Amino acid sequence: MRVIERVRELQAFSEGERAAGRRLALVPTMGALHAGHLGLVELARRRAERVVVSIFVNPTQFDDPADLRSYPRTLESDLAACRGAGVDVAFCPALEELYPAGHQTRVEVGELARPLCGAARPGHFRGVASVVAKLLLAARPQVAVFGEKDFQQLLVVRRMARDLCFDVEILGAPIAREPDGLALSSRNQRLSPEARRQAPALARALAAAERAVSAGERQAAALLHAARSELEKAPLLRIDYAELRDPETLEPTPERLAGPALLALAVFFPARKAGAEVRLIDNRVLRAA
Amino acid sequence: MRVIERVRELQAFSEGERAAGRRLALVPTMGALHAGHLGLVELARRRAERVVVSIFVNPTQFDDPADLRSYPRTLESDLAACRGAGVDVAFCPALEELYPAGHQTRVEVGELARPLCGAARPGHFRGVASVVAKLLLAARPQVAVFGEKDFQQLLVVRRMARDLCFDVEILGAPIAREPDGLALSSRNQRLSPEARRQAPALARALAAAERAVSAGERQAAALLHAARSELEKAPLLRIDYAELRDPETLEPTPERLAGPALLALAVFFPARKAGAEVRLIDNRVLRAA
Image 1 (cartoon, helix red, strand yellow):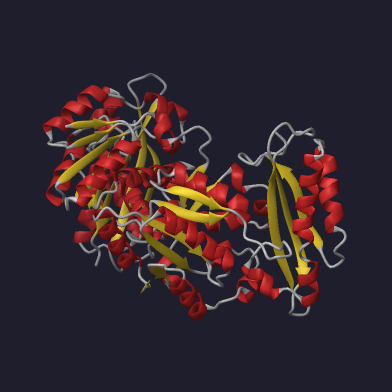
Image 2: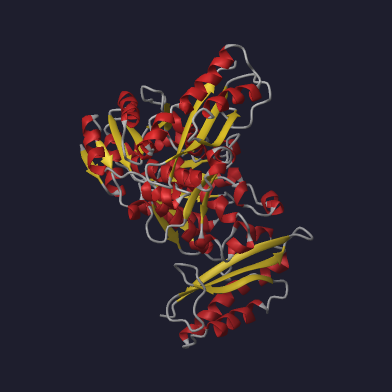
């Protein structure tokens, strides 16, 4: 596995591979790799001859400086995990490589970036769209893989890529979960032990709504009630949002569902570190067709 | 010469040329081609084996709907001019090709886009940066050529390309002028006959400031006075701005110049069409080193 730190070097690698007729897949990560990321790599390997994993904690997508400071950084074990997963290139740029002195360009997506995490985390998706644009231009992949846990991010990135004429397919990969249902996230390791025990409430809330849909329920309010009831069983949990949205446009669903609906959840739990919090998200598309 | 209307087709062309080891140059235009554009093509031909000229009147960079409506559209003669100049590909996308239904992504440059034309034309450089990003991703050139008449645009595009990791050289080409000094512009043809006679006042103002610098003048106020005095000799002319700025950062120069300074002018003249106006710009870097 090659470790590349410079944009120019990655571009030269990519140009050579493309000229030789080989397809590249990019898996953008912020490191702290877990089995969810390795699932993305697996999917990438099925879709391309060369897999590039980028490892870069992108400061511009953190609305909360404390969250940025406490974000886990585990480069050596990340590189080992990449090697084990058959990654061809680990792209590990320094901050100044993606944000050179005097940088002042931002990529901004409109409507799709406004609700949900866009409302809860001002500037977050501007940071995401900007860094993903840079990573796509540095790696020039034919495919880029993003996890569906960050469902809104997937939509924002896909729209950005289409709107700016990126010649790339943006692929979503299913959410990987712990045996108790908790969606894998680098932030899980920051949960207090008791919060970790209660964290599967998110997955149970999604499942409760799904069961209600399967039983014929179509009222948005009733489905949200089913989900919130499960969340409220976890006393340490504080809801950030719990919303039903159109899974393509992210517009609010009608009162009575008539098609697929995204149930998107964001909550806070106490962190291991006293006084700090961890924000977790999860989602599920309810097939109320 | 090939005429390409689809982004996908241009990307396939570019990928093939790059894989074959040939360099591409892009000359982005809004059509209404004149000798200034052909100078850009000439420079492009010296720097690459394949020259792509894009012809697209980009609506998002017009802050004034009347200006957009009256912008000259002369596709047939533009294509003939491209053929005559040895252009390899004319890229003529329809509006929906670069702005598909539901598009909502914008590229925004900060400080460099704020003064001068950025202050006078709100949103203008957001439109420019966005469309140039799309064109660079559609054509994937190694070089892109922009005229120095739009000096601020050149700086904005160059910064955008660097900040987003575009693997492209942004090249500036010297301003082409009529025999009487008027900088070539597609908007010149909209001037009233009397305005056309007075329009060389812009070039004379730049020359007056240059003479003052050569004579040892270093006071910004005195240089601006020399320029404004020439502009005021054209009674039909109305000044939009006349400013001295750092030619790299576009920050205001010190009162007493200590290095190169950009003298940037923007003025309004009456159009041929009664009641309408034409906005002209011009500039010169004064070598007060």
